[in-house]
Image 1 (cartoon, one colour):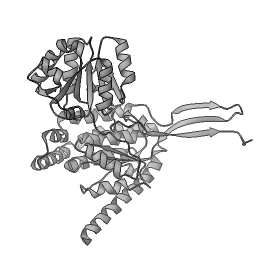
Image 2 (image 1 turned 90 degrees about the horizontal axis):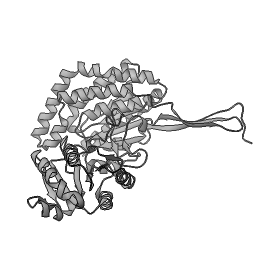
Image 3 (image 1 turned 120 degrees about the vertical axis):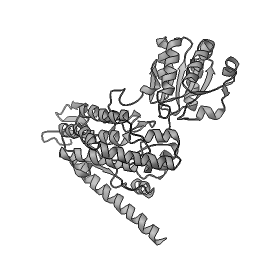
Image 4 (image 1 turned 60 degrees about the horizontal axis):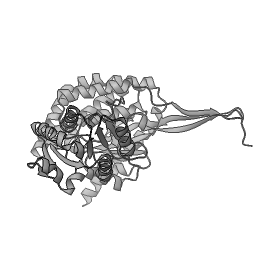
Amino acid sequence: MATTCRTRAGIQHEIEAMGRRARAAARLLATTSGQQRAQALAAMPAELERARAALAEANAKDLAAARAAGLEAPLVKRLEITPKVFDYMRARLDEVAALPDPLGRILEGQTRPNGLQVSKVSVPLGVIGIIYESRPNVTTDAAAVCLKSGNAVILRGGSEALHTNLVLAEAMAAAAQSAGLPAAALQMVRTADREAVGALLRLEGYVDVIIPRGGKSLVRRVAEDSRIPVLKHYEGICHLYLAADAPEAMAVALTVNSKCERVEVCNALETLLVDAASAGRLLPPVVAALRQAGVSCRGCARCLELIPDLDPASEEDWRTEYLAPILSIRIVDDGAAAIDHINTYGSGHTDGIVTANLQTAARFTSAVDSASVLVNASTRLSGGGDYGMGAVVGISTDKLHARGPVGPNELTSTKWIAVGNGHLRQ
């Protein structure tokens, strides 16, 4: 027992030291120019390329360990850095580097009748702790977004990707230092011990915001245990509603893309809602296309009347984020019923409608309580890159401090600056 306690104390000491270094780095980062931070980000793709061989070796080691441990196939897929993923990571770094500086923006301002000049200016949050699972591209995305917005970051990736994440973090930190940013601006927790998560959640004197990215159990643990404000994303139970007038070709294409482009991600489609007026026309071709793509379809009783060989859907299906080639389908009476279903069972992440009617679309977008609502577009488009935000650290389903994709602008706070000429309070 004494050995275990000493080990935990050692981890706590190590994480606290990271917090102190991050706080000092954050104070320096707040004074850097947008050009300097952009130069640091622009140098990162070349550093990743230089580390490519080491990265491939580390990733192979993590993949082998994950398969040996019996990790489910979708989670193993998230872990792998394919050439496509590597190119994606590099492209995201370039995109974030090219974004406008999110700091020093005058959000509002005025000159008071007495001549006092008052302005509200964007500033960094300070130190951000990010706790995440599986996908190593989160390492590059999160670090890029935090540094772009002048925040120091402490990354704690999943144990299944530890070797991969360490190579990525070291390459990015080297690029940041080459541009003159503080060495502790980007730090990676180097232990897989779960105690490190608890230690990070107790750093209220050093860390300003915690962002968890991962499964519901991880997010719940962080939200319950953290002494620090949490910006969370619980799950993505995403819907697509095919309205009465939805064009068939578009309905089929958007349903298949929303579900199948990547089934294991948070903005993949999980429930399809079909208007009763269009079900006879749309449901057969949509189900045929989904089955051809390898998706198992579960339908409500009304769906089974049209397509008897569907698997029956249960109440639990409407509340499930599958992250797998499974889709639940429900026929609804009208748009109001679709909105009610989404607001009852959805997670507030991403929901969409397929319709040719602007008024129908407007009613849907105003009534659906989600961070992203799409009209005639795939749910897979809800995210930083397709919204012109470059990389993001996640998609928040909270309503405070940010909602939806969290990019550089969302990782800022504000400061009021007042400039006078000897002004006194009268």
